Length: 295
Image 1 (spheres, one colour):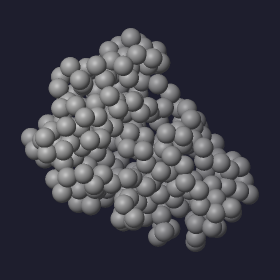
Image 2 (tube, rainbow, N blue to C red; image 1 turned 120 degrees about the horizontal axis):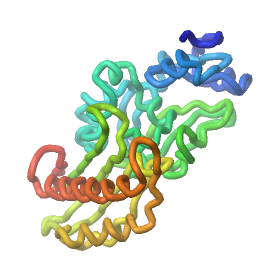
Image 3 (spheres, rainbow, N blue to C red; image 1 turned 180 degrees about the vertical axis):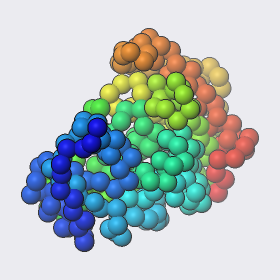
């Protein structure tokens, strides 16, 4: 099947892109096109106009800024995967990126494209919610910043409005001396969308006590979710402490039931993957293997 007819525009600035999007509520942004192009081909998306922002220089790149790591929206996923700065400053994202699609799709796909697409099973949105990233967008009234936990409002739905263009993702950089991360997911085939995924980042002190802990799950509900594991603070992250924290966090989990997996399956797998992710994060923080950050 071929796409329905549409106009194609390549703006010269971010302001021009916002103007084009504000003037046509059926216009869509395109950059890597790894999700949108197949949707066009299947006529699941029928925009009147594609606004190509890929070559806008202000939307690409990775930089440190005031305790955060800022990744431009059109930064390729492959570039992020190979970034030493991301590996040391946002190690959880570095660990999750190999799970995103395949090498050819990561060569074209962008960080912002995955965020804007808002698939509940996608890895990059999950990491953003888990770490409390800020999603930045250009609008006709100026830049806005939205916490990732508020940005995703449902399957393929975000708070991005007409005339707005996602511009960057701002990840907090943990400055603790010992930080470890864990990421696991289950899918039907390698690189398929996950039935369930879990992401964890932990910081510990020199005695192995937890200073900070973040845990998120994807694929279970209509958007990525951050779980409250604050009960782990001050513990040595023993097996019972992890089990109790996960059980309390998952007690009210509202899981999706569909053709791919039952809600009960997703809840049970979520508990298992959360346990593995937290254990990996703890072990890496203790210096067990790579992707622990010692400052």
